[in-house]
Image (cartoon, rainbow, N blue to C red; front, side, top):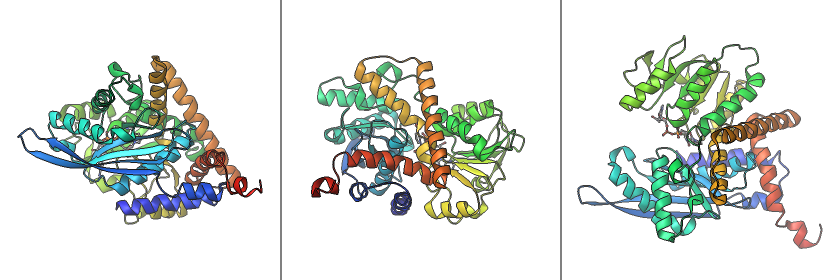
Length: 420
Ligand code: NAD
């Protein structure tokens, strides 16, 4: 599965290379990650026993700035998965024109099996293990699946202890009280909402009250469901790892969020009917919004998809082979490297504020986020029209043009063989 992911990333890269003005040097540089670190993290468990966990940090490319990318705690984390996610981050930061490269980290663990104290020891142990390869000017981690503000706070604190210096810019997504930024926890869903609003006329021009099905009711998916419902969308189905809930007339998202906050799961929902998890992907809706994990829509289930457009809030939720089938079927896919880039965009604002020792007001964060998401969405749509590309390819080309320019600014073959 994860090796396939790397293959999928390569398919997208090679396809975009055909349409971008990219030197051979840039192509060569972007083929492999700059550095990959695998660590073992010993953790003292509450019962006194010792367990070691496998952790990873990959810096894919840092030509445009320090590597940037989240830390994932999940049993499926492998070196290949982290490398693929770091590759996507390289393109995401370039899509948004942020002064960052791409990185990613993770620990192979089921955090639900750990007590809070064990989770703290693991978080601190992970940072101790990777401290040599991160830093505000080197590689800047952030939250991802199953890591949250508190985990980032522990990690920033541990880094300060190790380096004996207060360096909040080493990690973003921290609690406000530890140098976080207002609006970070809703940044991914806010950013996705702005992309959807900007492209709505392009992909769903003829619909007044669009319908949506959202797979993944976590940080990103649940908040986006709320924003869409507040904006007049009919969110007819949502799911998490415990259950999928459906109401063709539109779900009351606020009550589902309250239920999930109370019980920790969507199962036994107060509204709607429970349906099969796969049935959510097959609903006849205007927009299908996968917001859980990668590979949700693959060759075996893509034939069931009846949505008109897919907005990828999760990273890599549509495999490359399924993507080609959706394209043939005329289903527009708006890619992850644009749709979910709001998180890293607000992380960039947090990093800047930390370095300057400033605080930023929430309205400034949200105004700057909206302006950037709208501008880059429009730029990608224009590029798609000009070069007759799918939105995914256009987003990659948009990023590659910026990455290629940065790499070429350090010299190309023509610089060194005297032909320039
Ligand atoms: P999260 O852990 O808060 O939520 C993930 C949700 O997906 C949970 O509700 C979980 O129960 C659900 N889920 C897991 N497996 C499922 C399945 N098979 N079917 C249905 N639901 C399932 O994570 P998140 O932060 O919301 O991230 C979700 C996705 O968005 C990930 O791919 C992540 O990489 C991506 N993303 C998140 C951010 C961010 O800032 N949170 C930024 C960029 C990208």
